[in-house]
Image (cartoon, rainbow, N blue to C red; front, top):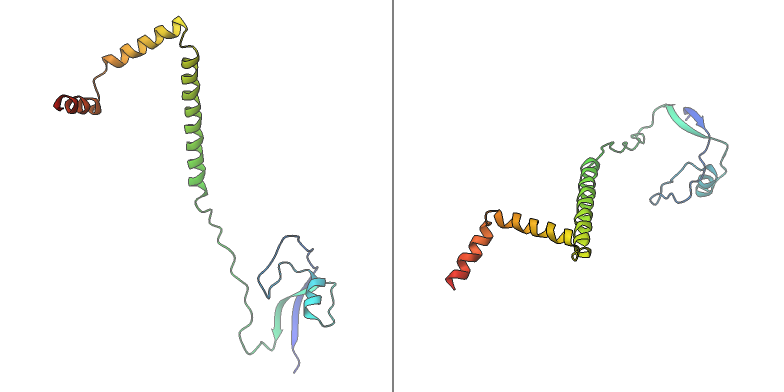
Length: 141
């Protein structure tokens, strides 16, 4: 029978290196590649996007694959996670620099005075629960 097809003509797409598709599918509409796969005489100047056909096919017409979800996923939480890691890294770097400075300048009288002040401040603090527990266990021996 006679079938009337209405289609929009479009130019072929260039071949994109590195792009692949599953078996039986094509990655891009590269007309010379498609003509090679079809194996019969093919016009490679343009391809047609089917708009309608009359009479309609007896079985179900092919349908377009659904578009991928445009969900951003967990990227925002990963961004916050890396921001926290960066802050922790800079704080750790600052602590390491401070400790290295104290180690290098351990013989400096000013640094020794600051260390004595830090130790006096620590001595004025209430003992921690762990210290109290350790003292009780040591006395029980």
